[in-house]
Image 1 (cartoon, rainbow over the protein chains, first blue to last red):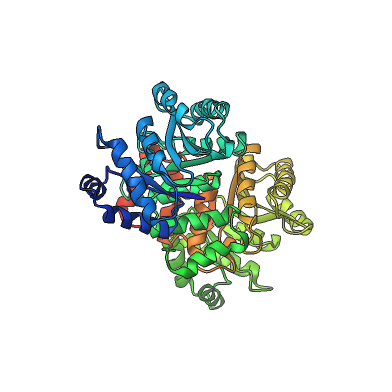
Image 2 (tube, rainbow over the protein chains, first blue to last red):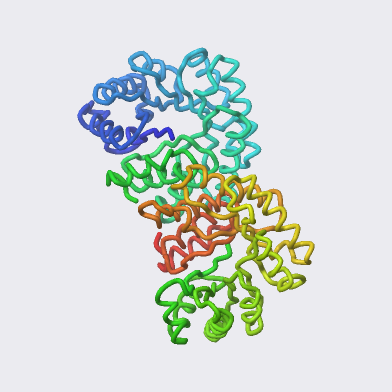
Length: 265
Length: 265
């Protein structure tokens, strides 16, 4: 399970303020906390700063990598910001994200073509948000083909089937889950990942819903998540679901996590 | 989701004692509690009383149905005990369970053939316990064919693919989950159900594991569970997982359950 820590996002008030006053210590603390909690990648987002996104994204990467030995997940639709961040990034970054929206696709392909970068391929196109598993699969197919034709490795592609709120339409949960399974089955070697919070939009007790949805998605083959790794309950759920889906030899990861008392089982 | 309340089982000390001294009030209380918590069927088991199982199972059915307007799930491999219980049962009972073990199969078929009874069809044969999804599917196929040839309705068949401990073999969780999905897909109209506790045998924090496994199985299509309905946390998980798998119009069941404060979200 690949875990991307989502907390260094400028749309969160504390982070937005830290970025605007270049408070490196505040950013570093959140990076360290997430890394120690188990994040494999640290997401960095400076999207709210129009005109300064490239500069700030670069600063975030440098600041984060001064204290943690982990790659970043560069969270921007802007190829200029991505390139600025890549120019200072150590190790192999992840790009969050490309989609089949033409402007976004055409702008990002030249940046990532032929590289060893990992890329999140979001199932969205200019025809709008997909609702069914079938619609997601069609977009995933075009994205995967486009990326492979541009010399990206299958193993570096993380398809995000796009989570939509179950309160809007009762089929939105199960159609997403079906898409995860179909993508894992039909495109051998491709990964699937997602954020969780959209699923519970408009409902009470969102964390509980998000946890159950993550566990269900892992049962369907999901192998990456963009989450808050400081949430000890969601981490316990992921570790347990991984064990139950056959990914934990001798239950050793579960047992180690349980005994560590770092998580909330 | 069909919920069978599992608590009236003679192997539980309090129930075993209540049965042996014919303490009807104790049994009635557990029946009422489970029914009010959402059980659709009340499991009754008097298996520890060799030589008296028929008499006691009959007494349990009568006692339970004096206070709750729900059918029982008759939990015995002994056709004589099942028949004794059926002779006093009101409404349509569930039989727990038939299997492909020859002696059990041959003895139970005459009791249930041509009836409207619901039956749990356990994936077990004289060749032992199945380990892979494929082995489970083969037994399920023989069981379903046998039941249909004996004039049982498809809609009354609840296949239990047989949960085995993940601590014994890391594939036991995922092979069970694959079997649930394959049975739901290949035998349209057949239900799947199971108990949970075997999955976590030998591991710490069993309830947490059981909850995650239930949620994963629902993602794969499981639509019945034999559980303790007084466990407010597992019930909250089931209600949430049902919503996320497209079985809750307008999230109304989730919202009602959440507002009732009867469950632990």
